[in-house]
Image (cartoon, rainbow, N blue to C red; front, side, top):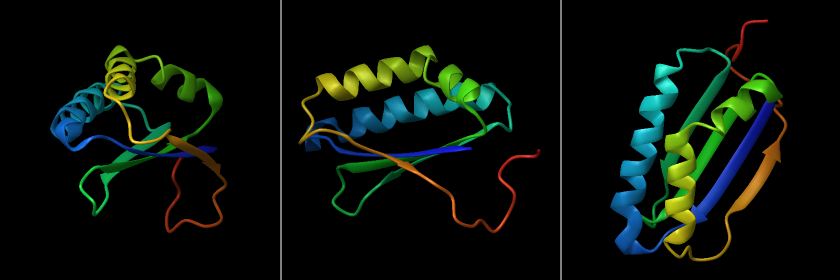
Length: 104
C-alpha cells in the first residue's frame, strides 16, 4: 500500500476555484468504480490550506489516477495560481486502521 499526504496553501482568491477543480476530479475518480484507492481532500482552519490524503493499493493504481485529465488540470491550475510556498509531499506508512482499506 502507498499512502501520500500533500499539503499546500493557495491565495485567498483561488480557494473557490481550487475547490471546484477538486470536486471535478473527484467526480472522475468516483466514475472509476474501483476499491483499489481512497482519496480524501480537506481544507484547514485558515480557509486556504488544503490537505490531500491518498491511499493506493499499489503503484499501478497510483499511476492510473495521477494521469486522469481532470486531476492533471487541477494540478496545473493550482500550481499556476501562485501558491504560498511549495507543496509539501509526505509518503506515510500505515501503522493501524479501524477497518481493512483494500481487499486482498
